[in-house]
Length: 609
Picture 1 (spheres, rainbow, N blue to C red):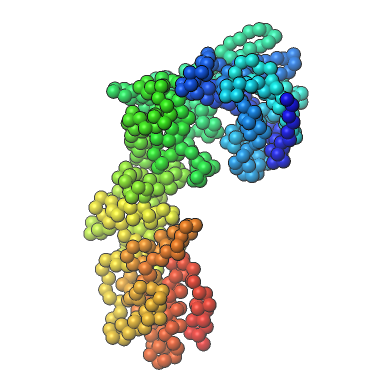
Picture 2 (picture 1 turned 135 degrees about the vertical axis):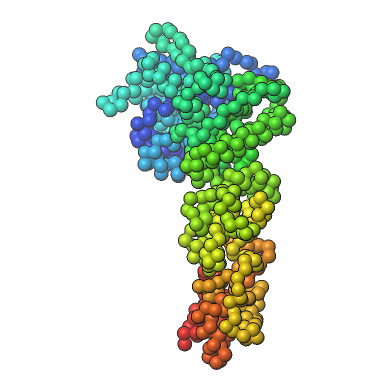
């Protein structure tokens, strides 16, 4: 059986970029291949827990150096690869995110290796030819995959007798700028294993065929089982980078142990930056699960709530049975208790960070605020009390974000509510007509830039018995003298009634404003759906053109309104032009698009004439 296949065109392009562009980080190939071997052993081990027919082994990873033939071999006794695995995993590169990967790779952004499923192909940075000898526990067949990493690969029958996989790297010839022979040296291999793979839980053994000498290179002592006093910051950082294929140091490390009726250790990390797909459906949350140091599951979703899905880490418990299936583990009461502890621990650590290191918390909040806000809003506000003190907002008086508690601490005693306004930017919100009264009364307003903010406030309703009120809603209940004294009541009523009659299909009401001082008109929402929620919901694919109740407020003291009123009395133009001008002007000031631009142009044209 010999089958030759061509790499897909896109795969060929990426392979070319990898082998000719990323040479400053070529040593990373060893970390990637060792990690793949460790994953293969994990899979075999997990299968053996529920299948007695799968033989157990003394699992190990071997690095075999053949200086004479310039071949470096990485071998494991893991699950092995099937024929389909060889085609789908080794014959296709970067199934998802390929375009983005290629664009960044062209910029020599080598930190992307390991983030797009291309770890195996890093071997071609140092090897002119790669051979994979494998025997799968699933199929029981021995297969041989071979390629020079240029255009094609072949799959033939193999001669491997034991289950597992061996990757043979036929190293490139040394160049003046690139020395590949060093990857056959004992000192270099030791250094790279210590740097990248020291915490791999299986022994990594080095073997020199010339000297017939074998030794174990990694410590294999899980970092989380060491006493905190014996762990340095560099130890945490190194473990984090290796275990989770990260290149930046973590923003925060959370290491805790619990002993009692349920004994377990947690080692958690908050990344400095979200993953590239963090806010997409393809992002998969989860915490690694171990029992007595034995790997059980890579991403247990039940251990971490959605609002803290950015957290990476692991849990190791001596009280979890290895005989339980994965499905049973996910529903186990012990796991629920651990999950509850993890949630409380993360919450308390974030509150402590907010209190003790404000700058670092604001850095965290900038990246992950949407997760926290969705957490407040999700499940009808079930988690609002847990998360509300982690939320920050800029205000009309401060660009530095503040918490709800800080807002209450500095508001006047006679102010009963917490006021907020929504918009796409600080300047846009501050220039809203609805903000004029707030400025006049010197009332601080929370500025909301995210789509979820309005929904979050609807779920919360209040904070510490202070209601949340939108300045873009009707009935703010802020005392202000009636601005319409200059016009007799009957004339005023008739003016507003006539405008409302023209706009009856567009608005619920037209009223004299008690909040405007500089602007002639504004639009606010009535009960229920807000204007901001209308905008957000109508952007969704499943929207049914939802509409908020619109109320037009007219500033009867404004010079434009007085002029329009006077000319209407003189019968100089039709009321419909006045009504449509004020309506569309109010929409534009609110950031809403006029539905009928011609209607606005006609109104302006006729009024000018």
